[in-house]
Image (cartoon, rainbow, N blue to C red; front, side, top):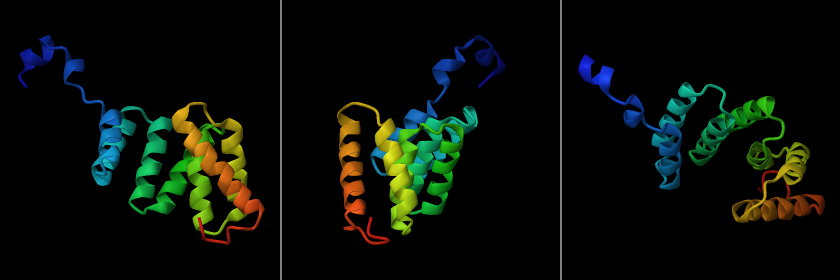
Length: 143
């Protein structure tokens, strides 16, 4: 782009919303591309917990569960009331056999869960999983 175009153009029209791009790529299963977009979004907004949670979700989908757990914990260090991070971390902990810690995060999620039809599906899943844990129906690593 020439210097004159840069001086007289509306740069915002050319900006890419990397967060939205990442959400769309994640939705269609392009996980590695989504991860790249979310990392670019994070570069533009360091520490943004919404972006960090999406990175954790993407890591989970591509099997990078240790990285996902670290990312969820980073979110919770910044915002202990981040319901989505409690939810995601709970199920990662269940997979690794850490039932007690998973139960704590499920309870935290249920206390903090947002309202709405999308959230209701996750709330029901968390309630059912917590009930199964309390009843001993889930053994280590079954999640």
